View 1 (cartoon, one colour):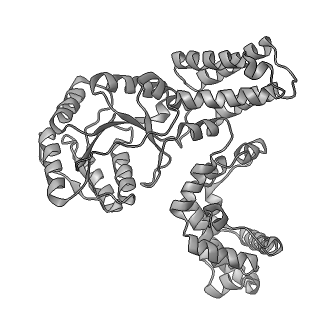
View 2: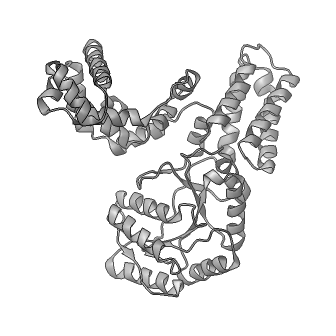
Length: 439
């Protein structure tokens, strides 16, 4: 999402490198470039002024002017001010001391509200809680059905009342059902509209006043840029939400919403949606987001994803085989699938400091379809072929290519690369996922 902004900011910092001293003119020029970069990223104008004023004030002080590495000090200042702008520290979801915790989900139609209700429910269930989702969009049966389908996918019950016309009653009934069945968190999915209207807001306020939620969470579409901020302001005025989920943060947007929402509304960003799957939800950490924006990576989030998605025992076993040069194509396929559980490869690359930017500079594109083809090729092999690739002769290669919908050339390329990797791993005698997991 932040690629364009990251590139522009890195261009600004590159222009400051190698200078023993920075003049006030240098700082002014850098500030103009940063201001323009932020505006092009669709950051709110008042927020841009607030941020650049804070950066300039610090950049023209002794912190930079007397430093022997002024360019690094400027990067440090920008990082710290971006972090502060987005809230400074991670804010956890509030939980009621007396169950059930009631979370009221709000947002426009199309923002991803219903999907992120399920994502949050799944996250809470993984933490050992017992959530219940309540379908309160009584005007749209499709919305209730969507929540029911998502509930089945994540194994979380859904309270719905087909034919109901009163969303307040449905919400209250859902909370009563949670108390009866011992569910300790209730997520109330409310109605959305394509645009903000008084009827929707009145309905939200009525539900809020009736169920007295522990938290009201607003889901906003990060891809709508400045419009997302306008939506957040409107909801804050009418409903007074307690936190934000930014959806579609993995999309092709300019990123202004992530930098503006907290500063404009004063309410924290709690979570960010990083993909379409129900497990693609992460806690929002301002310091990590600032690092991503500046192209410095996000190793902590990468490690957390690995811990959540990779089986340590399997990783240890594969590492031992790699050290001995005994890795099979079955092992390789298993490791590839575990890594893919962590998210799109390009997204993971962007979390490694410097790697994402180097890839972009070299015009390297991470094509997920190529990885799909690798999986298809290996899946088209017999068990003996995966264990002993050396037996794969010309006729076998043609059969594998036909079975996987690829070409013999692609099969040859995979086998050659795998052979090189086996030699490399045997020579290195170390590596693998357990080191990432701290095992």
